[in-house]
Image 1 (tube, helix red, strand yellow):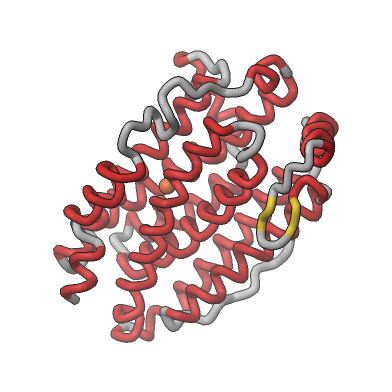
Image 2: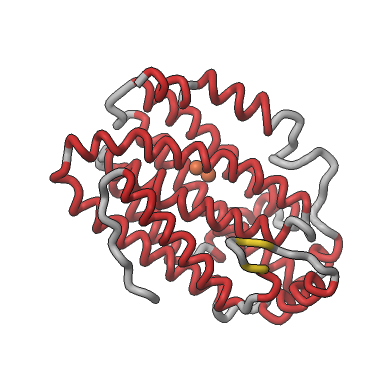
Length: 294
Ligand SMILES: [Fe+2]
Ligand SMILES: [Fe+2]
């Protein structure tokens, strides 16, 4: 427990996050970095970037509500302190992605409406399943739903987005790099803290497994909606063609994303996240449930 406490302490958080990889950053990126001119000038791509960023804001708002809500449900001081640091991380993620909406040209007064209009209903449902557990102060289910399912998904989505934007949008890629580092810490906490609690409460397993199955389905439906029938499909294909021509390798789990169709990208992302769930849930003694495919 001593190692656990120091690894997830506020002191460790200060030294590894605000005083380390976030030092000198501005909304998660280097000061002076901007969204690329050709993105801002292309109405279809700009709209697509807004739509994508809204999903990140929705996911992060859910993580903020969950991590803050779980503080009072946590059975020990170490978990409370860690969740307090996570709460600030998630609030920062909400802030940096909201700032990106503004950088993409959304007016402050239109933020709420823009988020409402573009929020994927499947992602909203995904968040509701988790927040129902948090509202009941169900610490074990809440941590599995948040730190393994939600953050496992966020982690993989951010890595894919970073792979496609590294070469074409360093500003956004830098923002993503910091959030990925945060999510890695959050996922680690979930695994380390919850395994022993599941052992003490094996009777909770069926309900938690059902939650994972439900959340996984809503996640796959969110991916399906984002990759299939994207109104920006043609323009995105042109960007990918440009990347191939300039020899950019958008490497993600062994694939060059610029060579994949949207449906193939959806397949790689879904398989990556589900495989990750299987491994992480296995480590804490939960049997992974295969969700229906939308
Ligand atoms: Fe987050
Ligand atoms: Fe997180």
